[in-house]
Length: 263
Image 1 (cartoon, rainbow, N blue to C red):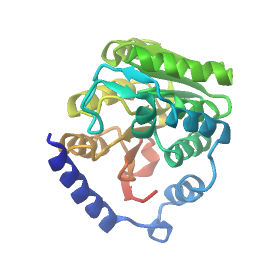
Image 2 (tube, rainbow, N blue to C red):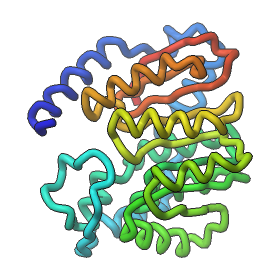
Image 3 (cartoon, rainbow, N blue to C red):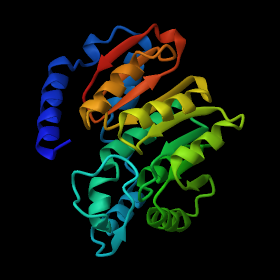
């Protein structure tokens, strides 16, 4: 999809999103009201300063990284050789998003967390600070595996397992084991077919009250289609559309409620 057309599509979706945004005064569900106030609303909390020091170092790095384009092509780069600083600026989740993921994981008391798309490892570090958690993170690009592992070693975190290799091959191996997932973050291949394929694999191992986050739900028309299908999936009983990403709830007590919020 041409970058100009993609930007126009995103602008349309952004306007449509804001037209449908509600706040806590329009939330009638006790679960969602609590979720809104405990996870979404406290946007000033949750940032981990030590990790942000690492982010700042990455943003100043002059190192060049050569990557394989395993997912949808990046609109930010014309070449597969990219400055590490630009990868950190465009591919890594923002501090605000990372803080949200950390609050969400803590709120869920998530013990097993799966992340598809490690990138430079900043989001992984946030998730790994969740008490009593284990983070299993998947990355297909070998140079990013090396970058992320350096950060994990620096923090001396023992609750991170980085699975290298093509996710199309490594994720099916995970779900062959009797693992129960509390929280999953899908931020790897931003295309329709892989998004649905990864969801269906993860869904086999989700806890009854598990949660899946889908990143870049309005990256392209095919991602918007994937998001619409997933939030209406028979196993999904509730969703939150935050424009930049979406949240899917497996908890059957939620009675198929869907909200549009801003972050």
